[in-house]
Image (cartoon, rainbow, N blue to C red):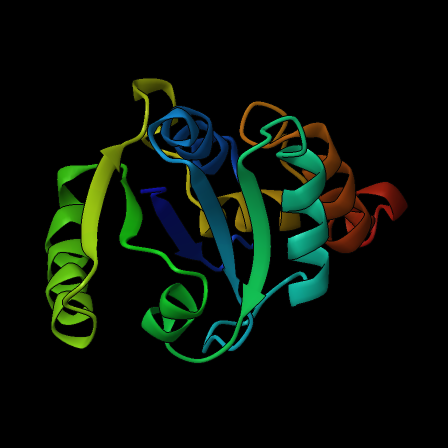
Length: 167
């Protein structure tokens, strides 16, 4: 029986930490779907379509990885795609409490699926999308934290003040 996993998130933007999780998890499953949440309460820098496009381009070399948008409950998205595993990345112990609570709720809503936690590699533990956005907005160098496509897109979107000298 083929195993499908869903790795949900906003991915605004997708970071090298996210890519690390996907790259390491892909061999563990027959099919891995990066689910890009469209309806979030967050103030996104990129539209859902842009986030899907960036992730698709960056992960194109992984033959069993798909990138799809979803709206609504993640468990509904997982069911629609035949997923029996929810993949969640952990950066630090501080992530665990929230992720554990989320896993419990997902298990209640979708008992046929299990959550698997995969810790990110040590060199990516401090990377978060919100920090990347903030550094980019303030004109900092994000080269070591994101794929070059994301760096270019963020520089174009939020880094214009550093190019023009405006404050």
